[in-house]
Length: 95
Image 1 (cartoon, rainbow, N blue to C red):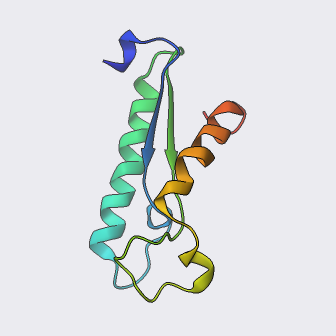
Image 2 (cartoon, rainbow, N blue to C red):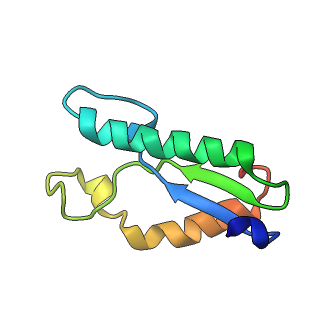
């Protein structure tokens, strides 16, 4: 479907655990590495007119981990659309 829309850009959101695999997080890290692998495969198959990006954000406040440090507690899911838009508009960062 994306191939039929030249100029579109597919963004998959993984996690920092799609880049590292800490002890005690095997299932979660496995799922996030899978998102990364899926995205890389899509990138290899895509037409040049369609962009594909995987994003690996750090911790955000979602209620899943109530003990997240105060610095991260200020970051909410609502922050990501603007950040993604900024990155995608700077094509050198999105491949």
